[in-house]
Length: 306
Image (tube, rainbow, N blue to C red; front, side, top):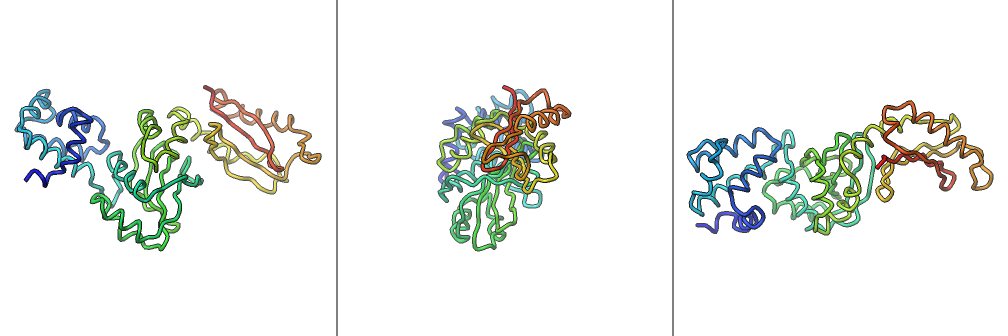
């Protein structure tokens, strides 16, 4: 009968946490959903006949027979891997399953795109819908997605929202199918940056360049920087984007300034005006600014102070 319990998973749990009691304590400390925490407490209470919020919970779980501990862990896993389709409450736990999907699909070198409401979106290469559905079908927690994948081409995505949440899901054509999201912490950023899955490495490498303080700063700066338009003659204004290699925000504007060949003659004046504008903002003391050029674009750069 033990073979019906998620053997690989609870062996993984015992290796990572030492015992089931430590695993349960970790979940109750980190699960963001009050509803799921309450359900987990009820499961623990049914097995131990003790109040799961009592100080004796740890000892009560350890006193259970090995089989009962593992059965309890299996039921708890069912709770944390469940997703409420109506409000997309999948969090960190479902993200672990999502990484397995990225790995199975062999996601590599995702495209960085920008969209209102997000600091950054990492979009995968194109996949045939049936291939994606075959992989997703292996994950019980994500079976609800299958009927929503109607476009012939599907992409996965991992994003950081402007509220510094990590969000993940699928592009069904241009439609977002959000599987879940959770509030990022510096520990989460470190964990993602140190991920060993080939599919998460390119994303982790980029996200790992930042801490939560910088991301929150960039949230404020982007909103203001997107309104910056120092010239009525500008022919092209690109939205502010994050340059992960340089850990800066960059806004590109074309069609302004005095040029002599490829040299911007009034660069210092433009930089001075930019600094004056920055000095009117609430975040002025938290950043360093610079101006450079690239193929007749003027690049306005903002970097958080270390």
